[in-house]
Amino acid sequence: MERKVGFIGLGIMGKPMSLNLIEKGHTLTVFDLNQDAVAQLQAAGAYAATTAKEVAEKSDVIITMLPASKHVKEVILGENGILEGAKPGSVIVDMSSITPNVSRELAAEAAKLGVEMLDAPVSGGEPKAIDGTLSIMVGGKSDVFESVKSILNGMGKDIVLVGDNGCGVTAKLANQIIVNLNIAAMSEALVLAAKAGIDIEKMYEAIRGGLAGSTVLDAKVPMILERNFAPGGSIAINMKDITNVMDTAHEIGVPLPLSSQLLEIFHALKTDGKVNDDHASIVRYYEKLANTEVKKVEK
Ligand code: NAD
View: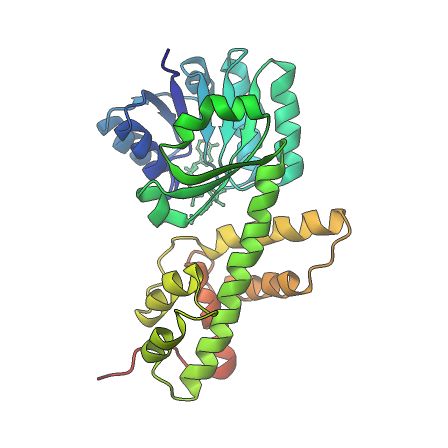
């Protein structure tokens, strides 16, 4: 029997992910505080619920794609939340990037009511959410994972069960260190090259096939050269993730010198009014230090 799917959180990521599920033939019930987002999904064929509880009542698998731990907690445990409406045997799949502690706590609360939970955060940003090729790192029981895999297939490409509850969001924290420090390293290099007077487009062409080449380089160099800092992944969201990285690391006794510097760079960018811009804006922190700009050479 087809399992009915609920989707809560229709933002930059959740909207294209839920649209992909509709396209794959799933029956969707959706909820968001933003009525415009709900209306767009309704126009695509989804049923609009008025609370998270109603989504849970009408669904067997309830997906959440919300900003941070506090929103996920509120939507699952709060008044008119998922656990007030979820049937025993239903599955919550939280695809938000939150802390491992909160994720495990929520899975334990759900289990008390016979409701299963997976943490299944994603990597790939808005472009991969749109074309349905997100990387999805999952934490939870393997039989529960297998039971929802066909639904996850509608949103992602590399879908891996990493371990028990909390392991998916832990993998995502590691992912965020690698992505954001990559952008920082790339920014140092670009600012050096720009102030030295090199044509950045030519440099990019020369190095992208070598060891310095990366998905980060291919995604962010063109954006920076166009001076396009529209998010994508905002400073706000990545700063939340690196804050979670530092809290989690300190709890288990892992010093992270580079990530802690990165967090300060994010705070500086926030003070500089760039919190809602793409995290490619890390380059603008370095540009300010060197009093230069990474831009295309006029030809
Ligand atoms: P977003 O802010 O664009 O969307 C979040 C949505 O949740 C909004 O539509 C908001 O109205 C809704 N919302 C908030 N509180 C709610 C509540 N109580 N009830 C119902 N709806 C509520 O965020 P996003 O960029 O889509 O990110 C979602 C998650 O995905 C975050 O955890 C983020 O870290 C992660 N993520 C984002 C990206 C990216 O590139 N944007 C990439 C990978 C992972």
